[in-house]
Each structure stands twice: as C-alpha cells, then as structure tokens.
Image (cartoon, rainbow, N blue to C red; front, side, top):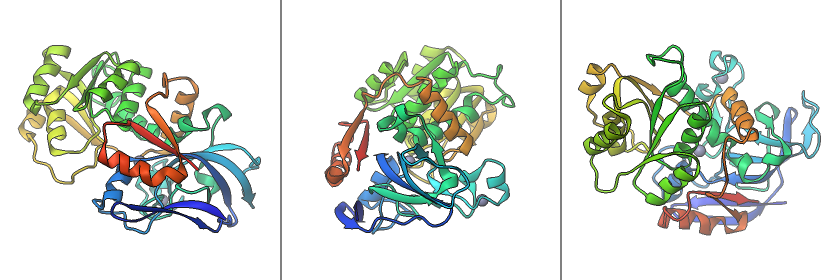
Length: 350
Ligand SMILES: [Zn+2]
Ligand SMILES: [Zn+2]
C-alpha cells in the first residue's frame, strides 16, 4: 500500500491509502522523493481550472528513485535518482520525433489526464525518466520540470539566433511575475549571459527572492498601471526599453505590462496561462515590430538542460523553497491559496 493525497473537490483534499502501482512492461516504479506544488494545481484546487476535474491526484514536478524496472530498454539500477517529464507523449508523431513532445496531440499530462505525483509511488514509461545526480534529490530535483519550462521560454525569447536581436543573446530581459517560473527564467537568463534582468512583481517579498538570486533591478507594481511600468523600464534600461520580455503570470494587466515594457524589434515570450482572452495594444506590437512567441511546458532537451544547469550551480540557493510532509499536503494547499505571499514555492515530501 502507499499514501496518496487526492484532490476531491473545490478546496478539498484527503490523504488515504491506495494500492502501490505495478509497473507494466516498459515501465519503472518510482518512489517519489519531492513534488512541487504548481500554480496551475492551486487553480485546480480552488475549482477554477478548465482542464482539471476531481477526484484527481495532483503533482507533476517531481524527482524520486527508481525502485524496480519491468522489461525496460535501459539498465535501470534500483535506487537511481530520476526526474520525470510531466507528461507521456505518443513517442511517434512528427512532434515527438522532433523533440517537441510538449505539443504532441496525444500527450497525457500528469495531474490533468493521469494521476500525478502527490503519492509515494508512480509507475511510468521509462522513456520519460531522466537520471539526475544524487545531489539533486530533494527540492532541487523537483525544480527540473519548472526550470525546463522557464528554460524553453528563455531560449525562444532571449537566445534565438534567428530572432531580430542584435546579437544571439539579448542584452536586456524584463520578467513580468516573480513566482517560481518567472524566478527560474531570471536565473537561467543570467546564467546564459543576459546582462540586464529586471524583475517585475506586485509582491515585494518575491522581488527580494529575485534579488537574492542575482537580479539587480526590480519593479514593484503596487499602484502602477502598465504605462507607468513601461516608463520605469525606460528609466532603468534606456530609451529602447527591453530587448526581450517574458510574461509569466497570464493576467490581462500583466500582459499589458509586457507590451508596455518592450522596445523596437523586441521579443515577448508568453508563458502565463491565467486568463485566456486579453485585450492588448497591438498597434504598439505592429509599429515597433515586436516578435511574439508562446512556449508551453518543456521540451525533452530543456529538461536535460535544466538538470545540467542545476548540477552546474546555476541556482544560487533554495532558501525560497519550503518543504512539508505529504501528510500535511491538504493544509499546504489551503495555506498557499489563502496567503499566497507567505511561501514562494512549496514542495511536498511523500
Ligand atoms: Zn507546473
Ligand atoms: Zn506524439
């Protein structure tokens, strides 16, 4: 048997015992070591999600150890530390064959279509498991998936040699939203050599986390409209404003802030998924020749890069991450919804 934290309805979770899964041929059994709570799952918890329905086991940001392997291709060692890709794609379509499994039309995402990692064990296809160094087990390993998501966005927004950027690496990046995904985008941009990174958030304590991770310029948006945020970006970065902007919230007002922050021939990477429909100043986008790119989750290559960057010490510290036992998960979800400014990132340890 194993312990499972199940989301049973808006604002409701229960911990209960369930049979330990048995791996099918080609699957490994993973003992979950750490699983992050994602913003999309908090939205589900409150009942505001359009694609998650109870009863469901949430959790898609995890690392753990391989317990057993059933007729696998790879010679998995029992105890090997792994991080998992957050979905099971078909492995056969043109997207899967070209390292774009995240947009596979047949993909099954953990904690949407498949039971997630808020449990002690998961049986998963061996092809979605990535070995990680022993030192990354714990909260750091649970960041592999969200970091991969941020990495894809930074690569498409700030590092694309095909873009209109004057050089292959953007000189400036404004990140709207200093939640975990935004923070990790800042971290990766600095790691890859973007020289000026500006953090924008409503909450001062999140900007403090950004500063502690190496960001020098921060804008607290309390009481500011998008135009005023754009003005401050101009004061910080100069007349051209930002070469690149990543929007990591997904509200109408934050999307408008992203547009107000970008300059001529700039690029905006869209990551935030909070609201679907947004009104925005497209005349600015057209006249300033702004390139716009959406990125979703992580490609397999971004997951590999996340493991490499984390192993290389790209992330200065983990002080902004709080760990709790899985058995306290119901209280943790409630706390994160009721006082969202209290903890930047919560991780459950089954
Ligand atoms: Zn997530
Ligand atoms: Zn596919």
